[in-house]
Structure formats: C-alpha cells, structure tokens
Amino acid sequence: MIKRTVFLLAGLLILVLFITSVRAVSLEDCEKGSKDSACIELLQSKITDLGTQKKTLSGQIAQFNSQIQLTQLKVADAEATIVKLEKEIGALGARIGYINQSVDKLGVLLKQRIVATYQQSFVSDLELILTSKDFSDLVLRVQYLKAVQENDKKLLTSLQETKSNYANQKDEREVKQAAIEASKRQLVALQADLDNQKAEKQAFLKATQNDEVRYQQLLAQAQAELAVAFGGGTETLIRDVSQGDQVGTIISGQSGCSTGTHLHFEVHKNKSIDDPNNYLSGTSYSYPFGESETGSINPHGSWPWPLNEPIYISQGYGMTPYAQSGFYGGQPHYGIDMYSNSLSVKAVQSGQLYGGSYQCSNGTLYYGKVKQDDGVEVFYLHMIPH
Image 1: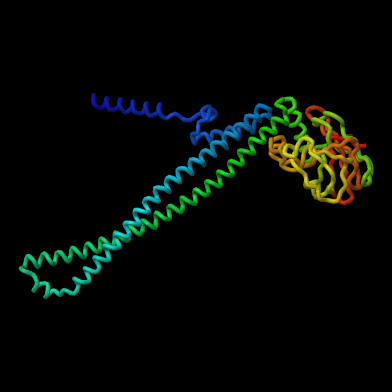
Image 2 (image 1 turned 135 degrees about the horizontal axis):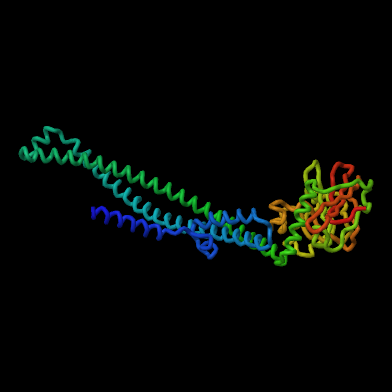
C-alpha cells in the first residue's frame, strides 16, 4: 500500500513538473519578439480581431504593426527552413558519396565472386570426390562451395539494396532542393510584402499626420465616396448639359466628408465602376504630393478633362497608398482625385445633370452626376452642382 502511494505521488509530481515546464506562448511574448511558431497563428488572430473593431487611428496603427510583425516572423521561419534544408542536403550529400563508394566496392567483390563461382562450376562431383584427401576434406569442400554460393546471394542482395538506397537518397535530395527553391521564392515574396507594409504604414502616418481627428475625416470621406458610388446618395434632375458646360463649383477647403479642396471624378458603365483612365485623354498633370504617395494615373481615352490646366492629382485610381492603408475597407479608390487653379467643373460629355447629396458624419457631401447620352454615368464629388 505504501509503495503504491509513493508511486502515485511520484507520478503526480512528474505531471506537475511537466505542466509547469510547458508554458504556452502568449501574445505578449510574440509582441516582445518571440519567434515561436505559435506566434504566427496568434498574430493572425489578433489582426482579424483588430479588423472587426471600430476604426481608430491607434487601432489601425496596431494592425499595421501586427501585420509587419507577422510578416517578419514568416520571413524568419522561411530563413530557418532554408538553413535546415541546406544542412539536410549536406548530410544527404555525404551519405550519397558513401553509398556510391559502397556500390563500387560491392560491385568489384561481386565480380570476383562471380568469376570464382564460374570456375568452381567446372569441378564435377566425381572430381570433387577424387581430389579430396578424405571424407572430412570432402565435407569441408562441399560446405565451402555452399558458403560461397550463399555469400554470393548475400552480396547480390546487398548490392541491390545499396543501389536502391542510393536512388532513394538522390530522390530525397532532389525533393529537398526543390523545397529550398520554393522557400527562397517565398522568402523573396515575403520580403517584398514586408517592404510594402512598412511603406504603407509610413504613407498612412503621413496622410493622417498621426492625428485621430484627421484620420476620422479621411475615413469618413472614403466611406462617403463608397456610399455614393453604390447608390447611397439623394439625387434630383437639374438640367441638360453639353460637353464643356460648367456643371458645378468645387467646394473650397474642408467640407462634408472632404479633407480639402478637390474633385473626385468617377465613371460608371453598365452599372459597374470603371477606370477613368480609360476615358480621359492625355493631358498635362502633376503630383504635388508625390506619385508614390498618391498613386499614378495613365489617361488614354478621348474625353476632355473636367478641370482647366494645370491639373494636380491628389489620388489616382485603384489600390493607391490610401486604399492600401485600409480607408476603403480593402476596396480600391474608385475615382481620380484632382484640383486646379480654377474651381469650375465642366461636363466631359453631354447628358442630363443631377444634383446629389449624402449625409456624412461631419456634414453633407454634395456632388453632381451626369447621365451621359452615351449611357455612361459620371460622378463629380465634393462640388456644388448648378
């Protein structure tokens, strides 16, 4: 009974020691720089949670930081995988060299045994008896020949196994080499992602100026533009217009869901949002805030521009740095933002002008829409239509 109790206590002690020695990695450990593989899953979970929370400047920065840290962990994991595979390939190379030498030696021995066995095959049973000194010598010779035959079989089997191992080791080395190349490609892609994520964070901080109020203004502007794009505005028919007619005036300074003076120009065709670059003609324009910050444009259509030159681009179409920063909820910027020395906005094609509005968190977004004669609808946001 005492022995049983002692064994139970010892078992419990070992279990307690095991439990206390195995400590799950925490999110705090990951954020402090732990490279545990569990950190990848924890950080992915944190990024998902941050994405569902209310959008705040601090939350968005935390999401950037977590994404950057997650990519850094994946980079470290890919680098460790490459190092591990290279060591394994080195060991395989040594084994392949050893096996290759063994194959050569076994091949030589097998050839010798084949010759010897071939020579022995010419000795008849009668000659074996006649040449033996006595019965014991005869038995020894018979046993010797039998042993030679058995050894030849073992030698042949060993050679076949060695050749098979050699082929398997070569196949394994090729598989690991392919895995290294895949890991290297993954590493290059991850490093590019990491560079992009760091650049996006810097562009985000520059755009928001690390100010919560400005961040909320930019976020509200993006959300309002998306709402109008998908039919969220209230519209009223104003009049018919011809190409080149003035359709409105850009609102100067900040206004409802606008952080500053600019025109958001957006094109809809067949009830889908289209790229304005496909319609606007080539003209003179510049990027006052830098092309890398605003995203580039490539106009190659036939329409005249809605503003007079010189034209300044404050945001291009598509996944611009602003869009990549999450302002549009993972969606692209659906128009081209521009401004000029003049606030006058002109119709790019003839059609029916509608005045529109959308109630924002900080005021009212005013816009114009022209249902053109060619069936295309053009939106002119952040202006007063008339």
